[in-house]
Length: 546
Image (cartoon, rainbow, N blue to C red):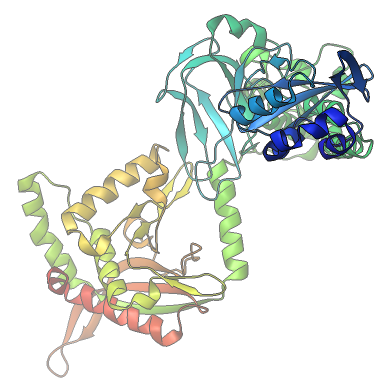
């Protein structure tokens, strides 16, 4: 029964129409649209209309209000938008006791269970634009530790690097849900729980976040049968996926207690036919980690090859892929499959470039600066060429081409963790000494796996040099999306060239440079114009100082 219906059919309420007319919207929030009821007094006699009673759950400063409704002894709760308290109080006063007592209940903030104190569930953060899942490298804080804003909770391995995750609020770390070495945690998935009071920590000893725990709430909040049917369907689908994996490793040990292990440990155990019951876990609460499986395999290897290896006659080692390597593989595969690559190669004489480097490095040593490498000069030349040919400093955006005003050069750095591409921002505006300093610092951070998002985001063009460090003469690199070009630098080699007079010959050092271009953005003539400008700066390096 709606509020409007009551106002039309109740003699006493109809006489108050003028009083509460402006509050009708506020009153409607107190009445459910179903067959709800409330108590009214008429001629001194209390009567109950329908079969429902209301109790308001009010939280100051909140935009949502929760009302508990009693329907024949069954408690329901529903949520609606909050009406300002002044309007609610005036509406209740205007009715002058027609409504039965409105009981104010306190709700439990951040609490997902009635028997748990207020707490905050912290999910896996998105620490880079392309991050969809991450790994827990290690926890800096332990369960029971006090945490303050700005303190590091744990180290998260993203698709780019290992990043420190900081705490945002003061409290206590009550439960670590995903321990050290946990892999492939989706963004938003709960990794830990914090509480405000130290005495509440013990109550979360057996805490286990689960989407299934939220399922019973939906049927309790809404009585229609159509709503609880939906969560049941959703629960069945994810429940089927883990069963095959669980049967492979855990089924033989069903007779004992449940064995807790990280996803990567289970996967490694499956691939190597290692029974989890034979492995001793070193993680939180005895959880088996990837390192435990590796230690077990190492101990088996000392005593002899495992049966599976001996049966196949192969001796090999499975190396798990780091998150950065997985992401790099996916991005490069997408690049090669979706970007129409074409390649332009030019040979540049680097005699003057080498001479200039020899003149600048003594000055750098005298001033305490870093030595300038050929790669630093190449980065500067590429940046200036992009400023001269801005069409190559662009990205394909499907409906349009985005041309960047900043010239930010990514530099490919190979490490034992994978391939990193830290960025030198505004390279066209920086001096050679500054570029040399930044390149060496970023390369060291990449090797230490300590790059931050600001160190590798925002690049517009990439330079990859396999010539100087490895002596590769010439190669074709894969474009780093969403960029439209990458410059592959080969090694410098001595060549015989014609001399000034007939029959005379001279020697010169030449470096092969290959540019991979996205044909959707860079036409062949534009790519050739860029390489012409680049070659001009390399063969006449003093022009870079102008």
